[in-house]
Image (cartoon, rainbow, N blue to C red; front, side, top):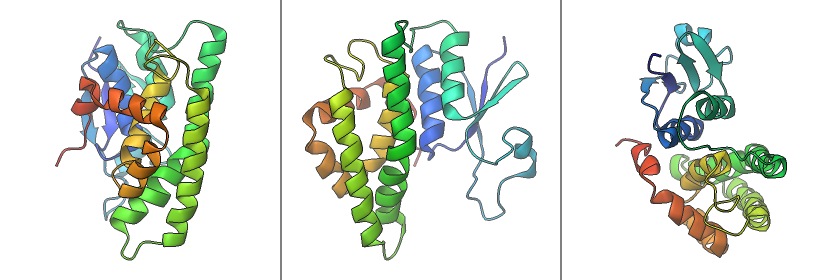
Length: 208
């Protein structure tokens, strides 16, 4: 089989989620740069890979996918390496629940409303940041309530839930408000520190 291709940018949380799945499985891949925020817009050729012009997209032996969760599940199921999804139905449902709540309630608030707003807007919208922090607190409280005993979110097994949560929280803690809020949830803070020490997380860090 040929080496998979991942299209996207290293600054993207969702590209990092897909990269983490490939890294944790030990799969070599090529990252083809696609900057959806470039002044000239999304490259026309890329629409063949993602009709909505978002990142990431993926290709493997002529098989194309878009959406990070679909790519991560394919990487887990199509390649050898440590399993990243539980076999037991309830644990798998919990994994999917965590991924879903992060997509629905965590990503926008933590990444865009807090981190990006604080880092990139001059002046930042303080009301938006305050609203984002309130939502982020609810997400972290829920993660804490759902977290099983053990090193990872589902307990002893590292799963796609961990790979989904870590890049979102990793962006959130780029700003002081994010670090301060995370510190209030000791179990999630300890989990994040543990994940941040993994080689896969270092290899997928944004360059520069």
